Image (cartoon, rainbow, N blue to C red; front, side, top):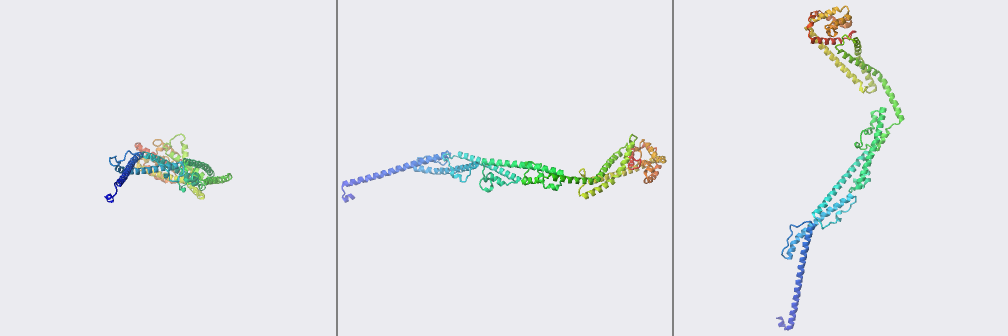
Length: 528
């Protein structure tokens, strides 16, 4: 329409239409090319995404992802949009897994460096190279197991170092040394004031072990030295009889004599000043001789002062022996029987009674002298390691108890005898006849009468008969009244002369025992 109105010729019209057709073809071609390029790019992106997804699955050691999309027949954009979220999730997993590997490997490198004794000041995690081709859980577990093993080894080494350090502290305290200097000399990092991690390498452990062994050897040497000095001191003290207060200042040395090296752990127990103190305790030989002379003179003076008391002690001991013999002799029922040597025993019994009667005076004198000696010297008088006053007091108590027991026995025997005499009053007539027959010759007739008793032995006579048979000369003035008082009983004695045959055996034996106890209470010239 325009061309007709303008009047454009046909040739120009065809030329313009041809140009328009060519331009349209060019635009179409460009559009088609762009579409092809876009399709190819989408194919490539999809292929790369799938390849990356597969590689991530392999590197992470996973067979598949639960949310992985399946290949569809949809458009490329739809397929690409479907795989992109799964790929993004796999990338996040990979990044997290790489960080885990980097952390574990960094700790492994750090602990390995500490065990090797290398100084670690930088963060080893930033320098770790992780193999991204193998990020499987199995590989991560292997690294974690290795890390745990290194942790255990590190802890064991730290504990061993702490044990060595504590041992050094204890040994240094016992030896009086400065432990911090010894530890710092081994390695500065072992000092707690250093503020950095301790060196736990094999070389440091060897140095700590050698240090502990050297300290133990030094401890043993010092202990042996103190043992020698302590024994020497005790020998000198025993030789010089040194007072306890003078020895007490060296108790820290003598207390170690029977202790082993492991048992000595007190602070400063084996310090050098202790050894110097023990060495100062040794005495020069000249001073020792002078001290011994003084000790000897004091011992002689003390022995001289003890002489009088010791003589009385010997007399007292002999008197006690005689007393015991007399008690055993008095208990012998056959001591008055006619046998060889009986008169010698009677004579010894008489001498023993004289000695025994002097014991109370002797004991009282001993007590007085001993108390005076102890007050003068302000010390206890010992006899065979026992205080003499305690021995004397114990003897007095036992003697008093024995006397009381004898008095009770005599009173009981007297009551029993009186009761039995009332039952057999005729027995007194026999005693009266014996007394009248012996009045002309008291000493000889008494012996003859005793031999003519019931069974022919003196031991069978009654106590009353025996006391009366001694006669006024033997009983003394104090016994005459008792003899006169017994005349009234003698008159009744004949009444039981015929009944004597019917006495019970147990009564006869009891009367013999009572007679023996009464006779032993007298100390006349002829009493045994």
